[in-house]
Amino acid sequence: MAVCETCGNDYDMAFEVHAHGAVHTFDCFQCAIEAMAPICEHCGTKVIGHGVQSGEHWYCCAHCAREEGTQGLVDRIMAGTSS
Image (cartoon, rainbow, N blue to C red; front, top):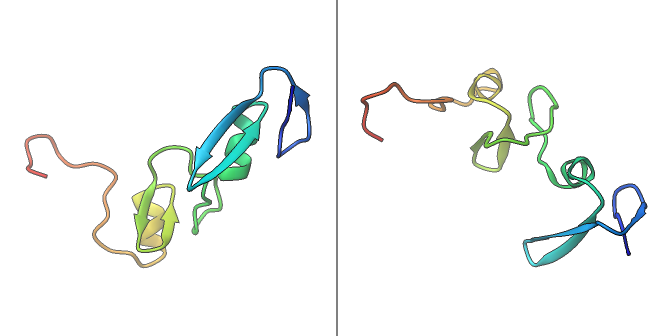
C-alpha cells in the first residue's frame, strides 16, 4: 500500500504522478489537484482545466487574466479564423 502525500491515507489503490522529475503519490484525484494544480492569481480557484498563462502568471480563464491587466488572451477563437 502507499500513503497519499496530501491526506496521509494508506490506500491500496493509490497512484503516482510523475512531474518535473519528481514522483508524487495520491489516493484520489482530489488530493492530486489540491497538491499540484496552480491557483488562479485573480479569483483563487484551482486551475484544473487548461487555464491561461501569461508569463509566469496562471489564471483560470481569460476574464481573470484581463482583470489582472493581461491583454490579448482569449478563452476561445471564433470558428473559421486561423490560429
